[in-house]
Amino acid sequence: MMEQNYMMIALRVLGALGLLIYGMRMMSEALQKMAGPQLRHILAKMTTNRLTGILTGTFVTCAVQSSSATTVMTVSFVSAGLLTLAQAISVIMGANIGTTLTAWIMSLGYSADLTTVVFPAFLIGMILIYKKQYRYVGDFLFGIAFLFLSLVMLSAAGKDLDLEHNEAAVQFFASFDTKSHFTILIFLAIGTFITCLVQSSAAVMAITIMLCSTGVLPIYLGIALVMGENIGTTATANLAALGAGIEARRAALAHLLFNVFGVVWVIAVFYSFVDIVCGFVGYDVATGGQAERLPVVLAMFHTCFNLANTAILVGLVPQIERAVCWLLPNKKQTQYHEFKLQYIQTNLVQTPEISVLQAQKEVARFAENTHQMFGMVQGLFTETNAKRFTERFDQIEHEEDMSDRMELEIARYLEQVSDDHLSDETKHKIRQMMREIGELESIGDACYHLARTLSRLEQTGKTFTAQQVIDLQAMMALCNQALRQMCITMHGLRDEHDIRDTFHIENQINAMRDRLKRANITAVNEHQYDYTVGTIFGDLISSLERLGDYVVNVVEARFGK
Image 1 (cartoon, one colour):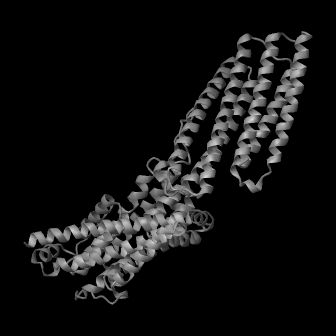
Image 2 (cartoon, one colour; image 1 turned 90 degrees about the vertical axis):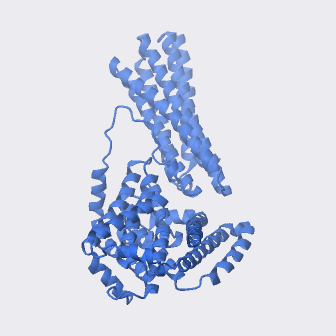
């Protein structure tokens, strides 16, 4: 009968932990949806120095109640080029401080009746959810209610377990030598493993607090589990960054190094440090007892540990940055770069706002690639060595294939994002970007068509006249100017640019096309050069003018025209 009771209590504990994780996730997602753009601007603009970076990380983590959410978000911003690695490290330090609030909330659940908050939060949350304008606020209140309800359930389950009167449980934990560093390391490893397994340091912290509150788990072993949780919680960001770019993986690795370093120095002064923390809350380790104060001790240790670790390492951010760069060096460049999206990382998507930001950065990079591709065409036009001509042509052909793949992957990503609940403004941005990538791919096709036309001329063994070379170079210069202006427009805010600049260049291209076509017809009729050269010259002029049209289309899409 007793075993059956324990089985039911164990199921209650597991159910409460599931509710805890779900509640925290609901809070985090609701807050990010309510303030997605604001969170983005906070992280991007309030990290001008290490102190503001730490404060920002602390503030955001206290708000979303998840250091993993803040860290993954930070890794996403590093991947998207919004934050530098040094800025990300300071934000991650702050996230470690901010997550200590969760432990204090949990300790409150063992010393106060949270049911007085739970049911009103459910009621108000339900009303707000049905009012679509405040739906995310209602989701946030539901998350808080689920979090507090899970703490009430865990507290009740801990009392029902009555482990302090269970001889077997008491003897089991008493069998460990709490004065041995080896025992501390064993429990540290257990805490790390379980946290990596369940992907939630909050859940493991809740179990640790529950066991300590019964008086069965000695405080030294409980604190060892807490230190293990600090290492285990880094697994979330590191797993998310596995398929991301090098900068994102470095940011995730910096999080791991930060927490591992903290655990190493605390282990060296473990017993003295724990005694000092216990002294802060008036708990006597030697005499024991006062089990009701142990949740506060764990929360205080968690706070002191992260504050002290941040104070030690805040001055060593450049050294941490160099260490992770050394551990994860850049790959050597090959002749042809491999296809890989730089900013879009599907495993790092958190909110539609972040997703759209990543896509915008990737589209701007796509524009830069097409500009570079046109530069290759200009180099092909002036190349006189046959072997180098072939190499340049092969490179342009490779870039055209990369352009096709980039369009396809960005489009797939935008389709995936559009499946989420989006605002009208976000939907409009996605439609704009879909149009932009289609036109950018057309620019890539135009560049490849220009290269093939030049290859046709090279195969005939004929050459352009000096005047034709001058005219083509002049028109290529105008197209290059248009592409440069397009890239500037793609990177900045629309209000910072004037679409008339692009229209002015396009008008010059059209005027030059008309003039050169008339001159070309006259020159062929007067036998200044043969018909084949005249045809190829005319094809190049038409292709350059079409490329200019595609550039205008991209810019118009960017301005929402």
